Image (cartoon, rainbow, N blue to C red; front, side, top):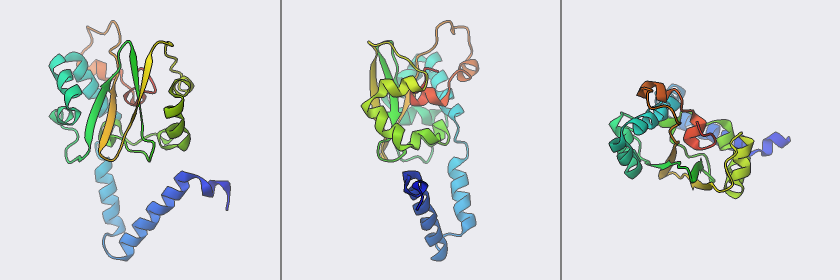
Length: 195
């Protein structure tokens, strides 16, 4: 075996492929049906969705309150999370606190709001290190926070997914919701960037 054979992502990929093969062999689903299910789950999944949620929260204080109180219900108002069974919790960055998301056990992630997860999010290095040394990991992403900024790491699970509500940039009062949407990146929604 090569060292690549021992990489956790390789093992997971093998297990997934074996499960797909068993489903096909037992006649539960065909390969085409599996492809349709995967395509449907990814349909409409984009970080632009999360950016729309953020821009709405920046421009509508009542929506922001609802979003922070019950993320699942608030994003459903915008047509996201339909059919989703996970609870969504939205955590807000402030001048004193910066939030970052991880899933230490696997790669649980609000797919419809953030799009397919980046490879680094699923990596063992990110999943283990961001919990132990979040400031160092964020610095590797180019995000150097002041020493007095508290960093809170939120661990997603199969039941609860998280999304960061980044701070609204200064001097954006005249920008429309659509323009604000264009400022928000997937990394900001995870917390590895400010925007």
